[in-house]
Length: 470
Image (tube, rainbow, N blue to C red; front, side, top):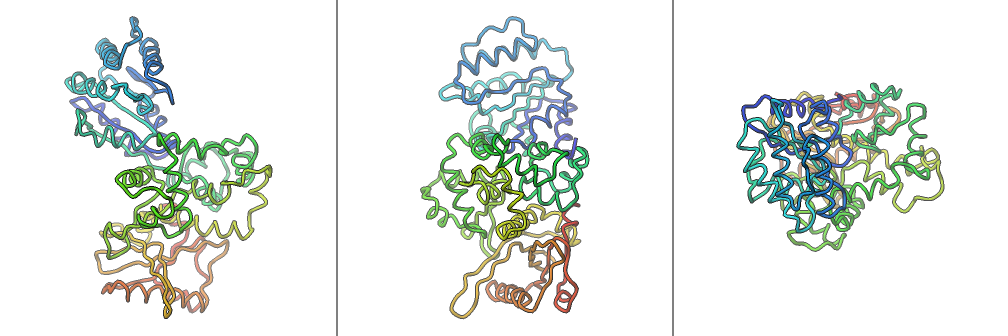
């Protein structure tokens, strides 16, 4: 298995514990939650079950009955309700001779149909049966991250503080994607891996769709733009799988997609027409927990000045090239490469890629052991001074702030007199506006490095894309 070392360790530690364990595994669709659990336990479960999408309570109960019967409960009648269903599951667990009884329920949120009393029956199964034993490993999983967080992790009823572990499964890093590409013999160099990451992000399932017999451009055409391509309908399915009513989430995402630096909460309300109430706060939390957006504070401000920025690579690609553009050109991507719209997208997508690899950036700067906070920053222009925007600031406890400037180009990037003035203006405006007494150093992050000249010599730190693969 590629990566997932910490996650596997947590699951296996539950097998050695002296008490029963209740673990929630969550994360966005296609990130590999089910694969992680099945591979870790070698598909050896006392009971494994997967909920049905968009089915009513009776259909869910019938499906549960089938799973019970197929896995050893001979007298598995159709349960009348979820209390009966979980009581039958307890019977199956009691008759198992395994040292540890691993119970795995996948897509748990789908089972919670309206007025089904599912959650109270789940609470009773854990509190009244499993937690009283020492030999049950109960694992629940689901792509509907908001449901898992609100109903299980933040439960204020019978499951309050009952979880013994939780795993928020993240996307692969560039390093893990490179390992995956090598394992599947995709024959991709780092430039191609970076471009694929700027389209797919680190979602393992998306990478599994790549055909080793085709170039990356051909793969993108086949998956996204050819009729019947597997990724053509992924966008709506992705959000529908995560949120029961995705329409307002779409509105927020669409609004954020129009502003590179991100938006404040009040700007989101104005641009999306989503009411400014407690539900908006929940939706922003949901999108952040799923990894679609990030909440960034402008340096020197707290939550009041928070910016919400769209960072999901696949969503950004969709809005840039697919939204409203699903015509009949099955070679759209091949024809788009190297056109201005492609080059502009590369610059933005590379910035997002770097933001998703801030740990690797800190490691490359040799400051992984220094306590630091990350921010973005921007200031509007006025009649006297131009505006300035900084993608990544690393505010360190050792008296230094790294002002990170991110640029993508197919050859070493050249800093000329004009761009040098832009950099100096950003630095000066930042120091003036924030009043910081720390040393502010410009850090360039580029694909292939800088052309050596008198201006590049003034850059304290220079990182290339290779450092992001650490």
